[in-house]
Length: 396
Image 1: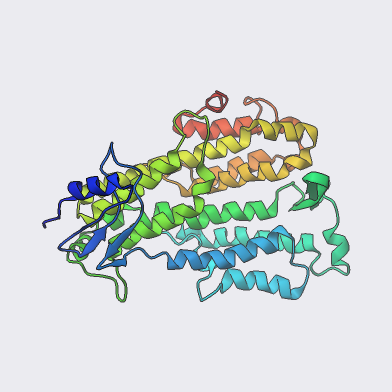
Image 2: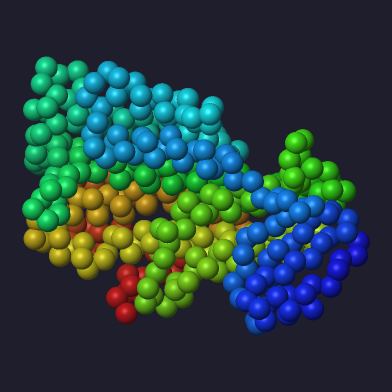
C-alpha cells in the first residue's frame, strides 16, 4: 500500500486555517481530518471516498425523532387519553421510518441477555407517567394537578413563579429525567462500548481483509470497519454535552480528548494501521468511562444541590434524579481493556441505597457526610473508588 504524503498537504492547509486531504490509492477513501500532533488543531471527524462522504449517521438521526417526541410527552405528563398513551408506546415500538428505539435497546452481546429487563425499566416510566397523568381515572385533570408529597407521586413546581413542573413518583424520582438517562445507558453507551468499539470487531481478520480490499457494504460508501467507528462516534455526539467539566483537574476538555481519539482511530483504520486504531479505541473507552463516573459523582455532590435540598427538598428532585439516573448508565461502560467496571447488580444496589426507605424526601440522610450510609456523598465516593477519584477532587 502506498499513501500520498500527508504532511506537506496538511501544512499548506493549516496555514489557511482549513483542513487538507489525501487520498488512499488502494481504498479510494479521502481522509479529510488532521491528526498529526502536537502542532495541528483538533481534527474534524470528516471522511470521504471518491468525492462523497463515507460517514453515515442516518440511523442515529432518525432515532432522535421518536425519542424526542417521547420525551415531550413524558415531560408534560401528557398520557391521560388512550390516544396519547398508545402514541407513546407506538413511538417506542414502531418509531418513525421503521427506526424505533425499542429495537436498539441493549442489543450488544454483553447485555442482550438482560434486554427484556432494560426495556421493562423504560416501560415502567411510561406506566408511571400515565398514572401521574390520570390515565384511566374519572378526572385526569384533577389527578395531573395533584402536588407531590411524601409517599405520593405528583407534580413539583419550580422556577420563577413556580411556572414550570416536573412529575415525580412517590419516591421523588423525576420520571422524564430518568427516561433520559435510561436511553443514555441502554442505548447510546451500550452501542458505543459494547457493540461498536470492541476487539471482536477490530481484530476480526475477515473484516480487516474486506476493508483493505476496499469492499464496501452493499449500496454504501464505506466498509464495515469504517462504519463501526462512525456509528460509535455518532452516538458519542448524543452524549457529549453530558461530560463537560470546568475547573476540575484532569477532566477539563476530556470530551475533546475523546473526540480526537475517535478521529485518529478512524484515520488509522483508513490507513490500515489496525494496531494504532485499537490504541485509539482504548483511549476512547478509558476516557469516556472516566468521564461518566466523574460526572455521576459531580451531579451527586454539587454545592447547588445541597443548598436546594436544605431550602426545599422538592426543588432538588430533578437534580438528584440526574445523578440517580447516571448511576444506571454505569453498568454499560467498560475500561480501556474492555473490562466491566460496574456490574448491573452493583448499579441496582447503589440506586436502591440512594433511595432508602423514603426516597428523595429524606433530606437529612441525603446531605450527610460520606460516612453515612446512603448519603449523596457516600454513594459518590463508592463510585469514585472504581477510578481513584474522591469527592475532594470536586471541591478544589
